[in-house]
Length: 530
Image (cartoon, rainbow, N blue to C red):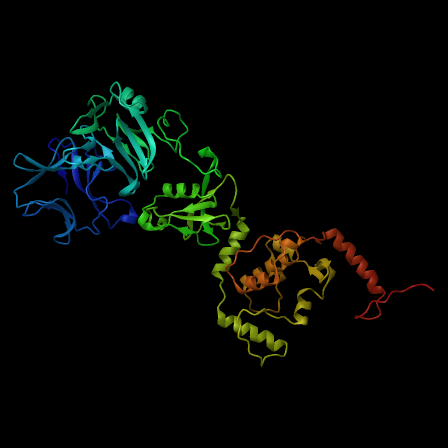
């Protein structure tokens, strides 16, 4: 049910926004043009009705309020000092007014949201103390108070971003403000007026109906100033989303720390779906931060390399979490993961290849159960004749018999040999690991095994044979890696003693010659002529 103005230009009623907010409803006013547009005014932007039982009306005392569940108040728009006989009317100007006879009590034009309609005043009234400003929605689908405010300050229009100067129009002259000249004034013939006296200071405008029949000036959730001309919305001011000098006319340069580039386009963040390696710093939800605020928070913090909204899963996209340089990102398109914005220029965040992200997800899904670990451990101890020994640590390094290792390496065959070092031969794991064929390393005698443990063990083993000592984990690091299946491991590089197929063949020939000189399977005899 809707309330219409006398000529049907405007309508008032309840509305909902987005599937995530399907249980929240608001009272709004729209142009009655049959289009599914945003409302030009919202009565209860910070106090939504939690269900579909909302009503708006005047009680027997003359209070104008929004209620639900048979009278429980959500918000009181006007509170009468004494019982009155009042009535509410929606005018053809879009102004929703409350009157008692000819006495004006309350009007929606005194409490604008994000849109200025013709004849609506932007400015302050020194008699009543009212300061009429526009405040953006928090997001395009969430009408609560946002981060940007459009107001009159001294003799000009200004936009504040959370209290800081963001845009300035300069003084009003010749019927317009300079940054609004092109579209608003010249093209669509918006006629601005500026009044300043002892009683009030304000700006408003009028538009000829021959030019546009649904005029408005709006402040978007990302700080843009938009208008309506003919049958289309247009953008006149865009400080962050445009490189056009005409759209950036009046924008105040944002101060950045010395660690960031002075050019905004050099501090580019790219949006990816995935997960970070650790929990970042979360700002209090009471700060009412938008995703744009979160970007600014990250940009002002020299150690920040990524940011995301904390309420993104409900579709609202508010709240803020930022990550520093010691965090890494794993890319994946699973629906349960988050949209995270990563700093592209200047580096600082490690983006793992798809194979590692897949491994990470696999390890998460294959998290070991402690009772199975104990059972497998007991079986291995039995194999070594130590079945009677009890072990308290379920994460203790697992043991394998000599026979099982010998079988897995085909009798320590040279065809499996990767290289040699101070601790003996290194076997052919790198090639299979790099080709994604790690399962081929598993002993066929193992009827049951955990793929996550196999992959983790091979990964750690390859890290332990890196050429550079600083690339190898310390023993405490190895113990930590073995005892945790959630630690993200660094990528191993190709081992220093990697041997190609050609070299392996050469080694095999040499071994065969040596085998001809062996007198037993234990020692190597060297034959020399007398």
